[in-house]
Length: 202
Image (cartoon, rainbow, N blue to C red; front, top):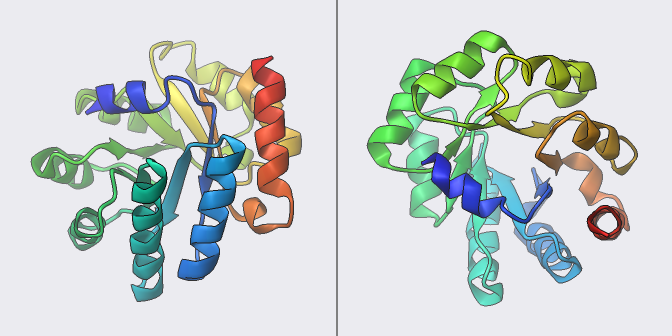
């Protein structure tokens, strides 16, 4: 399963997370992001309205040739809903034995959430090398530098409290992908994130 994220994030350092925005606003922001050059979108699923938003984003992704992931996957019910609605991958806020086994059995790509060395080791034992570090803004850039010591092979997606102003420091600390959440609902933020992405690539 980890090979999936090697390929998914091969040329990307940004993902956006569209939580609780409803189907229409979710699709509009997806399309804004894709047009601006941000390929990767996660839509968390926690209630029926968010499932409708995920389904709408997945359908828009088919039109634009993009895949969409499902976030906040903490139960088998949410995992199965994500698969039914067409999500290409899943993201969890944490990691435990049951969650990791469940995704392996369902053969669904998972980005497990970690915040400690023990959780990183657990995810590694289940074959994961890509992990979501959450909440990244609370963990801080020094956490990533410290964890790259014993775990140089792990690729981190920094999630939780990320902003265009702080993203560069996390990339400099060794983060592979920065995931922007609630901030992207603000006017012009998606375009700014995309512009920063182009600037870093140059």
